[in-house]
Length: 267
Image 1 (cartoon, one colour):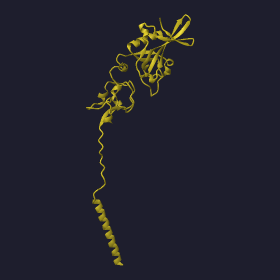
Image 2: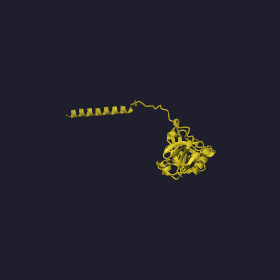
Image 3: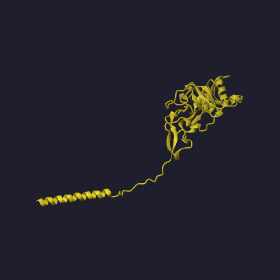
């Protein structure tokens, strides 16, 4: 009996020793698992100036409104403001006014900024253009849906006495005119159209400002007619020059007793 126990104990010792030897060999064996090598080229990054939050048209920029953000160099446009030579945010935006709104995270572009220490309106006007105000009301201005940067036609309506009575004469005196502001409003409020004020500021050249000034004296009412976006691709403004140069051979539309007739404005 004692011999059998010793035999079992011997087998157990041998088994334990074998297991320990195998474990030791496994621990010393080299790692033969394949190594994954990443051969992808490193992406070059540039720091681009972006909007920290939504920035409204007409806003004078300050450093709290923008931040530097890393962008892949191969998709950075030449119009972006890129950090170079240790340029600070203050240096990049000094004296800048927003001429077109930015959304949060959008890159700041030089083309959407005006560098000026003067007022916003004078900075926004292109060379040779003028800003002129005209009185309007909700019922004569597309129900209050005209906003800055829209394009409109200016229609003059006036009464004219004839031998047979009084007629109404209408004429489009300016076409495709850019609206700069409605009263002091130069943007949409909270993404919604604002209630129209009593004054619209229009962008015109010097001769067109004279035409509008004359029309304001002649007209019983001036109406702004909102143009479709598709009709504003050509941004040339047409005008009724005969109001200031004495040429009265332009055509106008006369409405008499409900009948519409195109006629001449003078002899």
